[in-house]
Length: 223
Image (cartoon, rainbow, N blue to C red; front, side, top):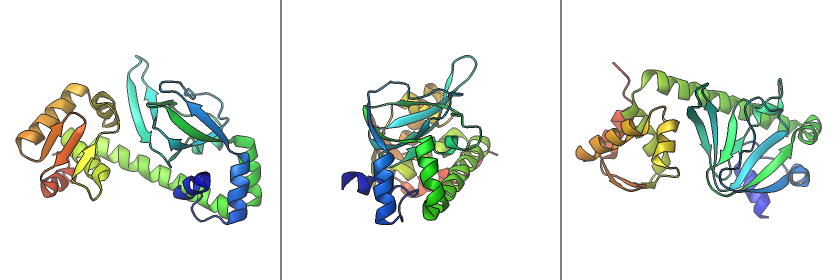
């Protein structure tokens, strides 16, 4: 039951019938992975894709100098590497748990064989890949046209949802990488927003004091 609920939380599998859901559970494998264990490297042959059951996984690229750039953090219920099972079949980035994680692994060949006989699952997969492309288009737009305060404001609002307090799920250095900046710049931005009484920072806990101001900042573009 727990696995079924987890799979239904993911848009790829949310509206599948019971028979399709049973077939999915029959092919997926549980994997318990410690923090810091490399799941795959950029250029590796894609053997399948993953859904996070618990924990968190970072997907990232490395520059020739070894500088890390986090593409996204995958939380429970989220999938990653699903696009890699198509096309040239290579993983386009690195993946590594940032906390001890339990993952569901879907082997490439077995899943593709299943996809050939399940039309709704194939339609969902196309929709998932479309969302994936939109996410990256939005990320490129933010990195290109928004400065660090705007990116941080948008991140905090998305993380908070309807709450006024958020607990950062990653370290500040990892967050800086995720926002396309460095730790020093992120620290200055947090301090400036605190001085403007927009947020209150206590370790990894951030309380949003002025959500309207934060929303305006999130929508601002570079001049």
